[in-house]
Each structure stands twice: as structure tokens, then as C-alpha cells.
Image 1: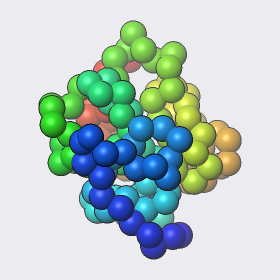
Image 2: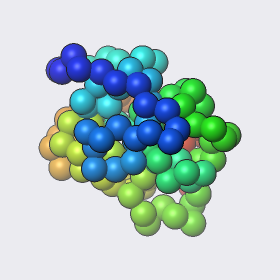
Image 3: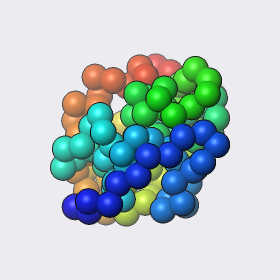
Image 4: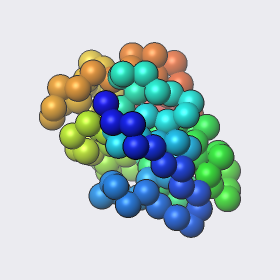
Length: 123
């Protein structure tokens, strides 16, 4: 686990990632000030700005607008980033992945399921 952490706020993006990403005290595997356990290695894309954030609280703290969850109509587009291997996946692929990246097999925090309503429409 890396210790180099960064905070980025609108309009600045974290240039360590190939996707648009913002957050508070984010490490190289997308852990943030709010969620920083060993399995907190996903970032999620918000429909309002097409920007990824490690969590909804990071979005709220770094964006200049209210968060909009990922809509069902866009479930065929990548909306989840694995912070370990940087693979992107769709929301349905993430939900079906059994708490691990389908590409690199890095473990994802199973507790994130309790917060799904902050990131995507039900369905």
C-alpha cells in the first residue's frame, strides 16, 4: 500500500489516474480520508460530472454541485474503477463480481453494498 496521498477539488483532477478522478487525501489505489481500509480500492463515477470519486463524501467535498447517481440507462458504460489494477467495469459487472476485481482479483470491501444507493440507481 502506498502512502502518497492527494486532495483534488474542482476543477483539478488527480493526474495519477487515466480517468477523471477527485477526492480527499486519495492514495494511489483510491483509498480516501473517509474509507482507507485494505479493501477500500474502488472509485465510482458520478453521472452529474462524469468524474470518479473514492466515495460519495469525497464527491460532495470536492465538487461544486450535488451528486447524481449512475442511471440505469447508462449501466452499459464503465462506472467503477479498480484502484489496484485501474480496470474499469460497468455497475452490473461490479455488483456481480463477488467483492473482488474481475481482472486482478483484488478484494473489494463488501460493506460498500450498504451504500450502493449513493452511487447507482437500483436495478
